[in-house]
Amino acid sequence: MDWSWLLFLACPLMMIVMMFSMRRGHGHGSGEQRKGNQEETQKMQRELEELKAQNEQMKIDIQKLR
Image (cartoon, rainbow, N blue to C red; front, side, top):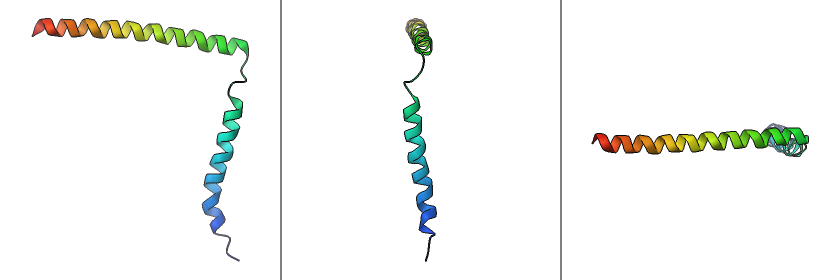
């Protein structure tokens, strides 16, 4: 009997198992972890807003140079 076809199924099946196990692990963090994640997100949003403001100022400066 030829079992070589199992080698072709091994990789995708293992990937599916790993994805399901990883999905189960998310969302079960402690409250402090979530709070830390929220603070990190807020910090990144502030930094993004600052970068956007700098970008707009640079656009204005470039227009003045032309």
